[in-house]
Image 1: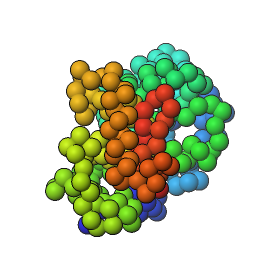
Image 2: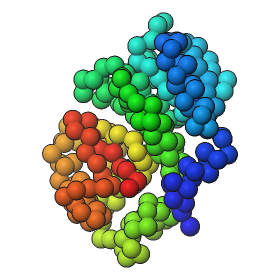
Image 3: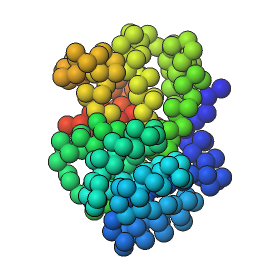
Image 4: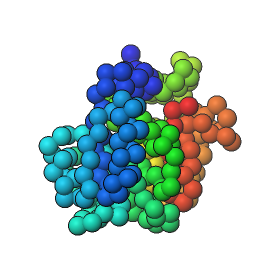
Amino acid sequence: MGRNAGDIMDSQMRNGKSRILLIEDEADLIYILRHKLEREGYTVFSARDGVNGLELLVKERPDLVLLDVLLPMMDGWETCRRIRQLSDVPIILITCLSEEHEKVRGLELGADDYITKPFGLMELVARVRAALRRRDYSMTRSAVVTVDNRLTVDRKRRQALIDGQPVDLSPIEYRLLTCFLDNVDRVVTHRSLLTQVWGWEYAEETDYLKVHIHNLRKKIEPEPGQPSYILTERGLGYRFRIP
């Protein structure tokens, strides 16, 4: 039987097992974030540049990385790229850059999410929890995944069920859904979805993607016009959310 993502996360929080690596050069922000995250039950390690951050990554094997983009010695883009060569640990970028192409750049380098300065501490904690939840979902790929009391996905049978009844999904729609399940609460760019589901030759076919997202929403959303699972991240892609 699959485990609800919230149950996995609650267990993880109670056991105090989640370890966070914070790579940030502002001493005051390090202090604030460390204090908040430790109060939430996390263990926090910090580095003030990308080089030392990579050393801590190898040494401490964190469960999640909070990574500032504007760093000395090695910027966040290069640090992100090198982390991805070493690990599939979730990465949340901390950035003061609000342009869409900068956000897309980070996501395509392998970041799982981003948060733009200035941000609230509760928003940061929520994004940390979401990224860790996505990581735990990726560990259940061979299981029955219980999204909520309404939607379940049986990966062995390649089948989605609404209130226990099979949903007639096309092969493309099912691949889109499983791609979302592998990236719960993570922004997945248009290009990433197109290349994972269709292949590189479709990388620019965003209108093509919109049609299939529309059809998938009609089949699995309680209210397709006001989706609660597949959320649009305007200009970037989509995010699959646990209601």
